[in-house]
Length: 129
Ligand SMILES: [Zn+2]
Image (cartoon, rainbow, N blue to C red; front, side, top):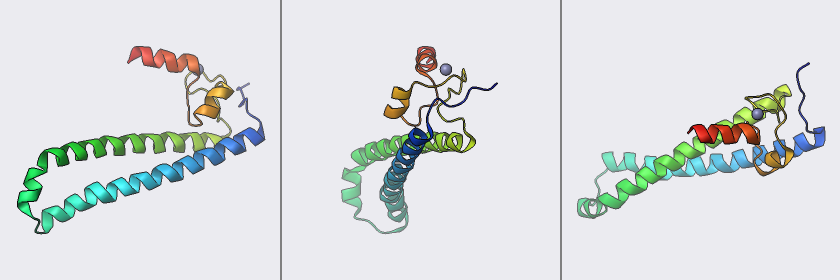
């Protein structure tokens, strides 16, 4: 028999609410970043800007853009993980380790609701990296 989630219906409901709240928050940050960095970059390409000022700032602008890009990637990654967790809530496998199929420690889920691996497998994964 396939192992079932170790969580009670109430716990799942709470964690799901947490996931949705976090997702909404991340989505907001994501949109803000996209609008501020990518949106303005596009208008810089088409609009006429004060060139000297832009030139002086080029170094830090590049740095900021790279920082924004990695932030955007991080956000996208997190949103993706939250979506996967939410999908698991829907099909009743939420709280189970993606690798070994055993229940993920409750404390771990409460600290990190989108955790998809149990502590043991997570540590194993980090050792491989
Ligand atoms: Zn595991």
